[in-house]
Length: 296
Image 1 (cartoon, helix red, strand yellow):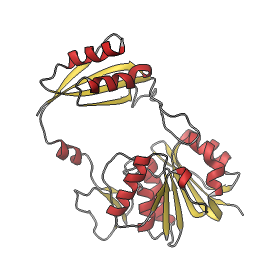
Image 2: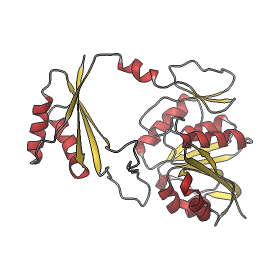
Image 3: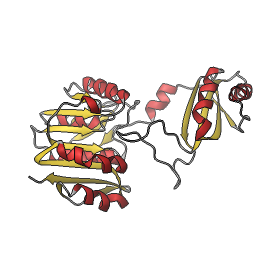
């Protein structure tokens, strides 16, 4: 079956309302994206403890999908009338019938992290059966190993874990770092995320990889300190969470930070050097990873 897709550009003020109205009037699905994604004007939005929720991009791109025979223009007009706004201009595209599952799967190949560590979707044969293989499929939670920040953290775990450590993965997303830590010899791994979907995805991925790891929302995390604390989030929440992350790291333990842009390294080092002896940053495609050892 072919589908008809329309794309329109709207202000954040009406993006979510128009998305809902389109669904109510017959759209099969809708998605809201940053209108400036991939440009210098791209706007990062995220949610972390203490940050306002419900954010959208100031200039949003709204994509709606319809059956081929549906009158998308009429649906848009009805949705706009319901909101008492003028129907926005839109672009339309006919999407030919194809095997969408196979097409999606073809876009994700195994990812080599190191000579002994691979990330392999379940529909692929592991390239090296003797390596440490993480089975992970793209899903609703961030972290498939393809992004430089995730890659940097996985490389650190692969290089520095000696075995027997306790790990805290703050901002666990898909659970990939906690799962990798267990497979690389950690004694225990705990993941934390503000998104309940991420917690569900992490638990499912741990089960798929046959590892035991615990995952919590922030207010559910039990008391305790860890040998290694990994936080692959973004600079703004890292600014806010420094004292808490330091408190979760035992004396002599190590912290690993990513989601940091190269130009933010000096500032982040300045913040975390209050508690840690910081190492030089490692850079990958403009993204940085910092690490350090907690002073007694």
